[in-house]
Length: 221
Image (cartoon, rainbow, N blue to C red):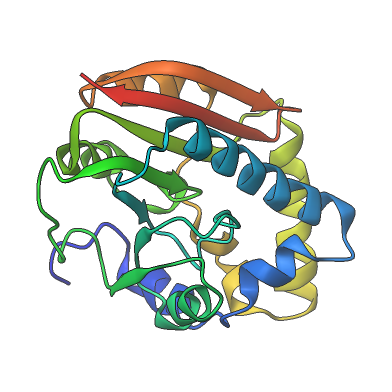
């Protein structure tokens, strides 16, 4: 398994989803789904724009199609789903792409100015290790833009997500939803804050959108 961050069965399930999976979610007739994805894309895009300067190098870890990049900035994406990467490149969201697991495809250290990691940590077996890997790719004072679902017993996201998985997984038979879309970790503001700071990063900004989504902007110390 090459010491992958993701379980093999979940990996296979993820790589089978179609190239328009996230595009369809962002344009869904379900207002909650479309709001959720467009909210995180908008926030990532805004924070990247605030941090970006001409010549900066951007990497998106677990990028999917990098749909947040409507400004078509130069972005290197890495993801295990080749179809999503191809969709991102064809539509100008990605400049270059690496197909595979971040653990396997080591990238140069101290090489990027901005790293994006949106809706990834909830899928991986060792999120702290992944954050350390991402931190190592950043130059000093480089920025990490991170989002995850707000997944606590009192959050709105958890119950809406469970309902979505029941509908698409149990009733409609979609394998990805039967596996809870590969979610194996749950984060609160406190737990995510602790994980970020223990990875050699300093938190600059944080935002919780309607107890649905958590977003952090952090800087490499």
